[in-house]
Image: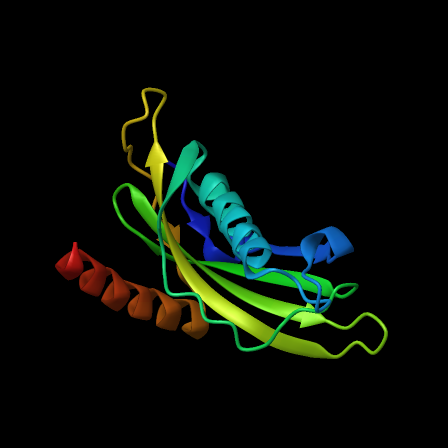
Amino acid sequence: MPEHTVTELAITMAHVMLPKDGNPMGFVHGGVVAKYIDEAAAVVASRHARCMVVTRSFDNLEFHNHVAIGNLLLLKTSLNMVGRTSMEIGVRVEEEELTTGRVNHIASAYLTFVALDAKGKPCPVPQAVFTTPEEKRRNKEALLRREKRLVVS
């Protein structure tokens, strides 16, 4: 199985938030943001595993700010950890005000995905290469979160 660098797999997804995404106050529904977080993380997991993946867990999602209709929702991803059949993907959510360029941090989340074979059973995924100090720090923190999740399970 070919290994990937974390940098190769990172993506940024952008979505203009439209009235259909919002509530009567003119802000985006939290569920819409959560859906986009899951989609962005799934892209990274699928690109790494090169097979079907399913969301195993989605950590506590806390919103620091709201997102206004008409602004850009940015989802910045990072592959943080790779297990035998699972991966942790980190997603940083930002809002860019299109008229000013100002960027606000909205939320951050960690999602665990499991790779599945054609029969729907967990299958091995390739290891990843963590090269930068930031990637190594994220990997170390992800391993600690994994230990905590396994204790709770």
